[in-house]
Image (cartoon, rainbow, N blue to C red; front, side, top):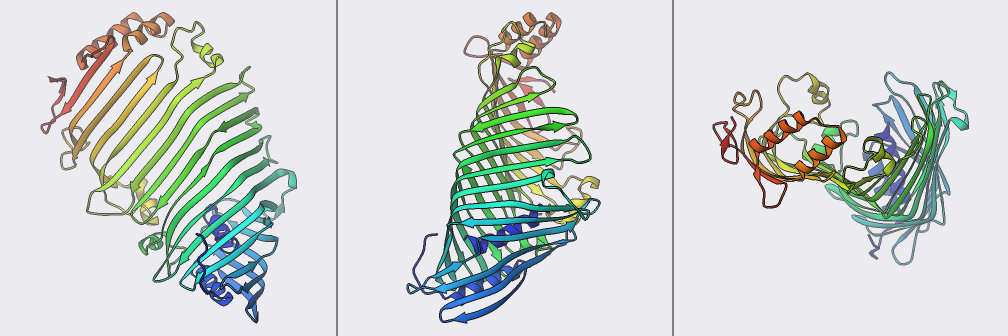
Length: 508
């Protein structure tokens, strides 16, 4: 349902919004013909009565609807009346209703049927289209945009207003889009809003579960680009990608705050969070899928009925990114993965639960891992038939050919482990390492503060002297003293014969 709701809103956004204006001649009919062609290709049935007077084109009783095969339902958008007026400078001004109703109805297999009405309301808005029929640019702005859940029906039963609430508001919204048509449509888009605020709530009538979620984002921005095939089947996502469908975009904000409270499984909870900015990037094509998520200066406080005090945490930087190939290929393809939790701190109340004597250093902790490599993909992951069979496949869906450890960092409680490494893998040898492709390469590691941390754990009673002796013996076998006190270095090597050595001493 979510994918088709996004597509429905995107269709409305094409008409409601859409790089700077290039002054060339475009007519009202040019604009409407291109929009209608785009919507029809996207799978919408477009119905409306067209009338022309001079350079003005009016479409009355305009509706757009599309079936949603995954939910056996449909989505419809009632645009009412759309007026496209040609201007003397060769541009076209588009007048739209202040409120645009959208309806989504369907039945997900094995779940309840639903019927939701969403109202898109705009004020102080304008849309101007310029360019030429093959290269149109549009500029949209609105003082305020609201999206509200007007009504919700589940299994033919109208839900009372208090059971579900969804409201999203954007202020001073702008959007600039350039659309080029040819054998393949291509577009670039940039936009933003001063603020994006939301107010969500639910109340489960069959249990005590309920929740309210409110918050806002400041300095919202978006930019992206993509390609859309002229002819494609919206019900066959893999075919769309193979035909050239692709997009690459990023959503950013300069600050955020969130408040949540509610009840779950009979327990009350509350959460507040804030940050000084973040980013969400997504890219997709027939070849790869990528996500890039990050946030800076984030703080979170959680209160539950199980604890007498709030759980408070802060983090200077948090991020996650992944870029993986998804198409079957005989060639090796690049992939990458990274995660970072930087300068993580907890409140003294949390520390006091397991370290009341403040034995451990309470310096900020950091965990970072940055990997890159090459792999051979043996199946098309976006093929629905393949997706259904992945859990039952006896052979792996891909081969790992190379792995680089660009960064490994774990720093906490006075200890720090860091390292880098580089390995290749022989997928023809699955015996040397018990079913795993045989690796060849080396990793260089450095450990500091380990002995001091062990001493503190013994002092706290979390580690026995015998366990500490075993840990120190293991470190002595695997590492050599570093350049500074309480530091260790280790060079782990794996050769082509499957031998493993640490600092030149053979372990296997």
